[in-house]
Image (cartoon, rainbow, N blue to C red):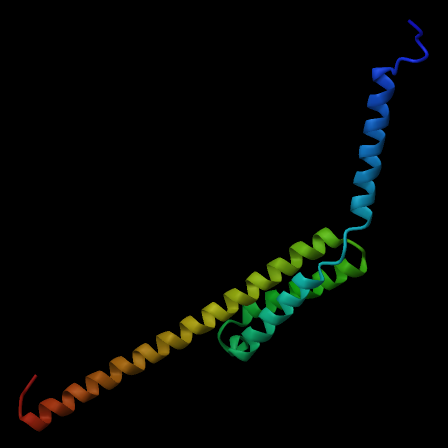
Length: 132
């Protein structure tokens, strides 16, 4: 057998590892900006602002804004993985702000309904001459 015509296993492995490494570096270098995730965070913040989260959940809304600003900075620094994570965290913070706002508003409505019901019962008892 001619040893020059037979491929050597060691050189094939080196080539395979070299190509894998090169592909991994290219994949990291070409990670696109998380445009959709950043837009989702902006929309979640806008929805929270519209729901008056600044009044009822200002800490969470502030956290959402800060994380979005950090995500934008990460994009500028070409750190797309961090930008993606920060944008997702911003969205969650904004959604939390919206949920807390809805909870506070629902609690207030519930208390108002209880108060109104109590007043109505008192009026009905007075009208009927009943005593509590």
